[in-house]
Length: 73
Image 1: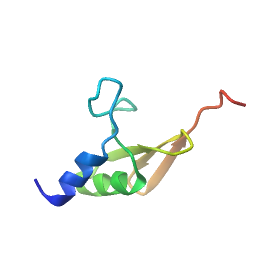
Image 2: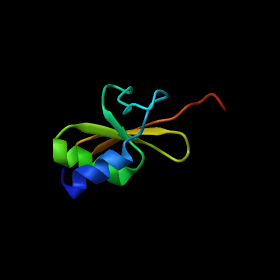
Image 3: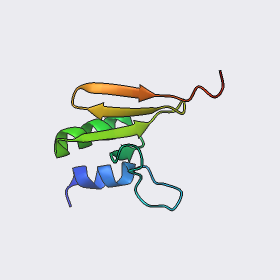
């Protein structure tokens, strides 16, 4: 396993069962934008990350799609 793969493994977001989270549209979810960008380029697919404000961002190539809850509004 390369250093990049080790880094990505350490940055994977986990679901409530402690397994890697792929719940949102089946994309790999990460803890940071940096890890999501690396994964997107390395695997030539989509990935995402959970933002500090509680929102979710999906990366599709150079496009960022941001989702947030409106329950508080």
